[in-house]
Amino acid sequence: MGLISDTNVGPLHAERIAEACRQQGLDVVLQTFPAGESSKTRRQWSELTDGLLDFGLGRDGCVVAVGGGVTTDLGGFVAATYLRGVPVVQVPTSYLAMIDASVGGKTGVDVDAGKNLVGAFHAPVAVVADTGLLRTLPGPERGDGLVEAVKHGAILDEGHLSAVERSLGGLLSAQPNVAAEVISASVRLKAKVVAADEREGGYRQILNFGHTIGHAVEAASGYRLSHGSAVALGMLAESEIGERLGVTAPGTKERLRGVLSGLVGHGPTPSGAAFREAEALEAGSPAAGAALLDDAVAFLVRDKKARGGRPRYVLLEELGRVAPGDGWTHDVPDDVAHEALRNALESR
Image (cartoon, rainbow, N blue to C red; front, side, top):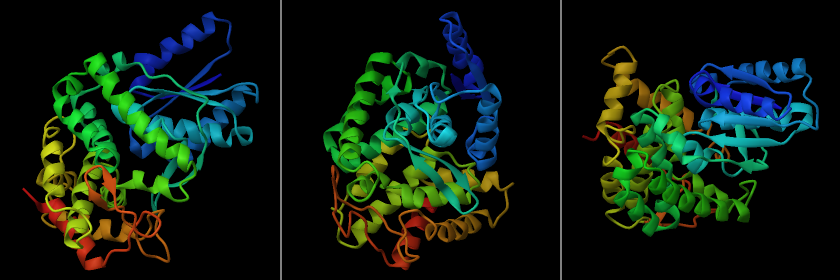
């Protein structure tokens, strides 16, 4: 068995899992990598794969990924490609991983051209989620991961969106029963979409709401802006796009802003604070905001949903319902998309 974790989660959880497996007579190698999105690379994939080869893991073995979204993506990609594919068990330890990253079989790494552009579909044989582990998360990471639950409600079930909003106190304090209820509901929603379109040939693209712009902003920041912050910005921007084009019901953006504002200070910063955070990350350069916008625009055309060099956007019809469009995505005039992105970054 090959256990994969990062340097934060490894000492907290993966080492105990490895020892428990050894006590059951299993041969286990535990490999850790530096925590953070900057480690989700082909180089790190190569090092982890070489470690499994050195250990001698065979096709009768499996990979167990223990950690957050970076670990589930990276560990899953290692499993998908090692010996042309071995089973993977996902053990998510964060809201992001429990709600989204460990579900659906998407695995991959980031490259200079953008986020998640190299990867494979490789469904886990099992996902083991213990909500008690959420209490070991820093507060900011709790809020960050809940953005994906907001997204599931926005695209599939307005009632789920309201439930997330009502439960924010218990979710942010990581109350296990509250967390289990919301996580289970989100997983059920996503699983139905994945079951209908496992390899994202059509309907599954709706899960990318907020992610065309979100991934561009995240990559433009050098992955120093959190995934939740970036996707929150993306949802606000893509809601504005839909409203301006007459596709999305008026008031949708403001309703989403109201829900996301409950997460400010706990993780995602979906408005002007994200813009200021990006400026701080750029060492206080006065031109940082403009540079972030320009870089994000450049990343838009490299999004994996792009067709003919044109980015595609998932737009809402109303909360709980996606506008079908052409294959569930829409071609949007550049000036409309760029203005919405600017507004999301600069709004106070």
